[in-house]
Image 1 (tube, rainbow, N blue to C red):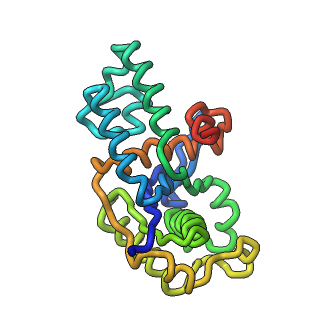
Image 2: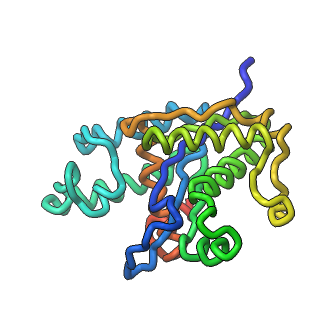
Length: 243
């Protein structure tokens, strides 16, 4: 019998480059985040059905894209002109997300804090934020999978050739040497050993298109994960937390 698995679907949001100039926002958001859904393999069919049913109820053909929905533009510009349908859709979307099997997971890195902490020590050689975020979020998911005697498959929405290649390197490094952070500083977090990573992680990450239902669900929860670290009362963040 095949070993049961968890599937970790990740999306990214924000600026991964620590040296890129920040654009001031009233809500203070200045971050890079990597996160989405950690879902048991036996819950995938239910999630796909939930996505199809939602699209059918509102006659949607475009991917569920968080930013387009929030600002009501592009394929979701109808949200500005059909208030009753829009209200029903947004409530239905939130309910669908909160009823999906699995866990919402993510790593949010506040860029000014990261730079203040690591610039004096590493200067221009400090890591891109995606390297830190990938190690942290994959290890957290692997810890849960290992505790439940499941293996872990990692999926990410395609970003670009260089970005996807970097992810593959981070993944290979986890399998070769374990967590790549300073051992003394990270000791209190009880990092997974190489043996556990090898036993738990599949050998490589997989990349999916934006039309993949779970990629869309990951995109939809990632912004609330990030926004909630700046504004804990943010509605969608609270709804996911309560669920």
